[in-house]
Length: 295
Image (cartoon, rainbow, N blue to C red; front, side, top):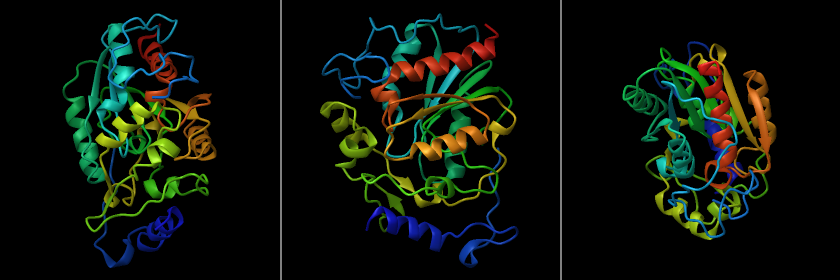
């Protein structure tokens, strides 16, 4: 089954929501509340550097990082886990930033929001909350009390009443987008070859192998539930547009970023800039931290 068939599956089996009605006769669902070796983000990676390499001598941003009492919480998307943030974590840690990677089960949008909130409970003080890809929908529904800024890394940002699938399939996919289909358990796995052709085409072969080995499937239940009012309607946001993303087309990224009135940065990166352009990711997180700390 190819991408277009999965698109049709989502549209037919989970049509756009109507007020007070649920698709296909189901009971109404309550809306949820709230590595690449030539780094196009600035040449930060050594030839052949591995995903878990601790880059102690690398400068991932020329500006001083304003830490104060701010915590940064990083949230992975589909077909990934917290290790996809490894280079960003080491760079932020080297600047004295308190940083956490929130593990998501990817079993449903509600489960993922609950898991993220548990990670937020581990922190103290104001939070800069960053999400990659699917996790953009998750961070927008987090418990809001201490979240002071949202950072979207080529991420999905459904509005109230929209499903993740609605924004993901808003435009025709890239010609090299992978063939996707849910398995019998309703889980969608990324084909191994897609890590080199679409998910992280700028990464080294070593990084692509690691990403493929640690991938976590995403449930159809994550992308077919209407979202509640997103935090980006009331909390300042930043958006890193990846111009060479083959998973979420740049036109869709810009549409979402402009709709949410985010502060936008763009670069010629693939779908996984946390791996292939970590310097740019650290920089935009730093922008959000400077806003929160007033520095």
